[in-house]
Image (tube, rainbow, N blue to C red; front, top):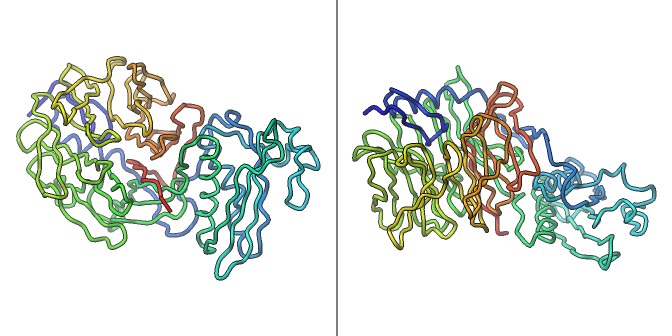
Length: 452
């Protein structure tokens, strides 16, 4: 089946002409993938290069923690400062910019530190406790009615190899103190890497959101694409071409046990897990044109959602699991539509911009993240009134995924001639690239919040 102007929203948001839909999807996916490292260690596989927003947000002083011998492999204060900067809501003040005498033996001098303009100071220590370390911190107010007050205090024991997670927990608590929302710094991301010329060149990876603690989930001789997390963070759904045609699998991350969900003739793509964990939406072309379906995990039934002559693809769920957003060209060019399960109605959501693709709901809001075609393909936010706010200035962005607290977006882009990942805060303040230390990565997916 041929189309004069068809698109592939399942991976790269590029529009294609005069080619078979499935054939082009495979070709474009293969062209997008590149070499990446499979190193299994605690170092960052993705190096974060900040490009904007570091002078915006709440001024905060993160004082170097007092750390016992054996805990110094993780600079807790630096991890916290980096986390808060990336959220776009904080502007940590470097230690060297604090007035002399602001800190004595790890203790904050409130009157002196207040002269820096910082709203609060974060101080803490890591002391031996059993086989690990007790990490303790407090947030002290420096201005106004909060001056000198302890606004937050927490302590907890962490094994030495999980000190970065303990540092991220500090960041989560500080973020929640200021915003009222849970922090997302202990979350993990999934992404696809390749090593051409290797026995298993295609690898599905997970890592901490900042690129540390990288782990392989699946190695394959054929392409892997569009991973999506289960709401409890224990499983990934993805598309694999291992049988030389696309099939959708669900895999347990710990046991590596997996189940094949869909391997119909034609297109099997774009799996998307519902927030309540009960369903997985997907794009299938088994009945003709690519349409939206969902698989009910409890009953094992496959249900069709759309039935349209145009291409419908890239399903993603609303936060309450009651609606599906998807990309369709039924209006002539690709725009975002919404299907409501209660009313069985479909409404067009986006009107501005030449094309809008790859919708992702922002938790805790009525806004969406999309890839919009304006001077190239760029990440943007669509607010409830339909207005579009550009978040990036690059021109080849794709595959956005939103942090589970709605604060940040990770996406694929081309930076300095190489394909890699990038971060942007949902308000557009903070921007950073995450190039791999030894190659290129693509197709990111942000995991859920950790409750413990």
